[in-house]
Image (cartoon, rainbow, N blue to C red; front, side):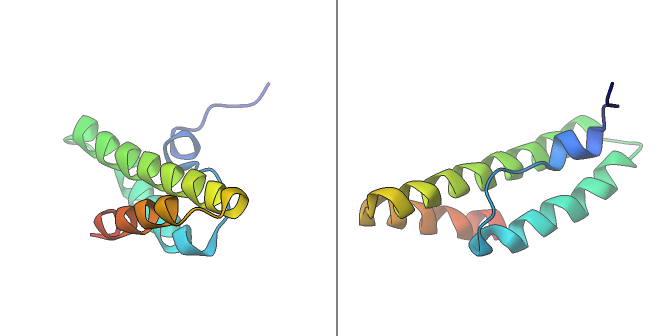
Length: 86
């Protein structure tokens, strides 16, 4: 039986694309701090969870661009990256 890890569950992202590599590293870095926080944990978990979800959506859109060759999906994907990095 495998053990549950809050850090792994909170920071696990889908896809492996160079575009979101920095975002994934930032999510993991913040995730370390969030897992050891003593105050405002719900807000911090929500922040990391939202960033992880946005990263997963971007990775899903990238995989669609790879298969469909759609510029509309590409534009949607690139528009989502800047807010995630801010």
